[in-house]
Structures are given as C-alpha cells and as structure tokens.
Length: 161
Image 1 (cartoon, rainbow, N blue to C red):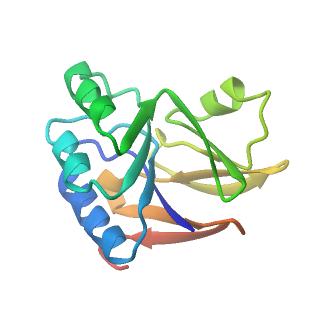
Image 2 (image 1 turned 90 degrees about the vertical axis):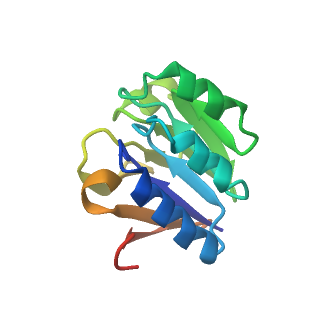
C-alpha cells in the first residue's frame, strides 16, 4: 500500500489538484494532509477526487469553519486536530504542529508521526517512531510517498515525478 503525505497547501490548490491527478494515475488512493489547506475551493478539489480517501489534520491556518464543515460532510474525508489511523498494521499519528500528535497519542503505539507547519522537510527516526514532514506544497511542490508495511519513504515533487 502507498500513502501520499502532503502539508501546507495554503492557497495553492492548483498544485494540490496536480498532485491528486498524478496520485490517481498511479493508483495511490490514500492521502494524509498535515494541515493548512482550508481556502475556498479546496472542498471542491476533495469532492472531485472522490475515490481518494483524505485524512486531514486541521492546521493553525484552517480557521474558515464554513469550509471545514463542508469537508467534514464529504464521505472520503476525515478532518480532526489529531488523526490516528492504522494502515497495513502501521499506526500513524498526524497533527499539523510538531509534537501535538505525540502528546495526544502518548498512550498509543505510533510507528509514524506526521506533521507540517514548519515548511521544512523532515525525515528521521527518533526512538521507535519515524517523524515525517514533507515540507510545504505551496512553496516547493514536494510531498512524500510512504510504502507500507515496510515504511519506505520516497521524496517526490509534483513537477518532476
């Protein structure tokens, strides 16, 4: 199974749409978004790609509750402050701000923590967990593809896949 990890789209929903078109062509149908995406029009993008399942950690810039409420009603979207999901026996925790998921999920086994916010790429292993931040889609077009269950992380770019 492959999962795409993206963060900090901000107003660049054009880049998000390019990414999702490429993911769909490559049969990647699960996307983790580590926040800062709620601008007008993003809800239409999530609706357009109805075959992709989105797990979205609400970011500090995701304050337009009209958009958030529309996204919450979409059957292919889960949006919360902290996401905790299991894929292929791999537990993934997601928050927008670094450390929030670690604090809220301290009683749970988490193999991968994902975050955004800093706009800086991070890929490291601390103790028994991977810490991943794909950087900011709005700036460099970068995202990660995570191969599960072996947890192989590939750095990708929407322009030079």
